[in-house]
Length: 116
Image (cartoon, rainbow, N blue to C red):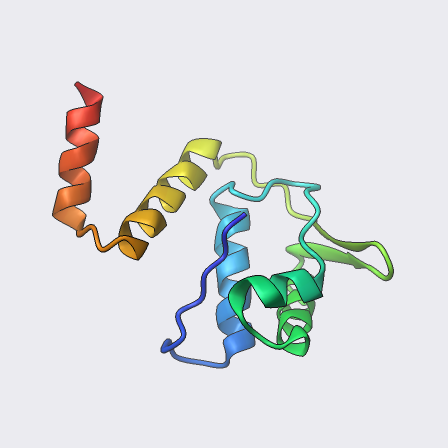
């Protein structure tokens, strides 16, 4: 699971982190019942303080997206059946393209060529 946050985006970091996790749940990259990384691991992955990761988890819990189980971690609580793994793969592809400096038109050209 790759979660990214915009370091220069608007709002507090914990809200941006929660938004990244929320998007991954909604588009199917993280499925119902799936265990999320421990807050310490998530914090290390995205380069934030562990308290920031915990605050993002609490926000998602309050929104009903995840369940927090003391000592056992966090799991996805919402079943979003109309989203598919394809949506998650597309999201990952776009993020990978951005990380590698591939612009939108070049990515679309690559997809068109692969479709043939």
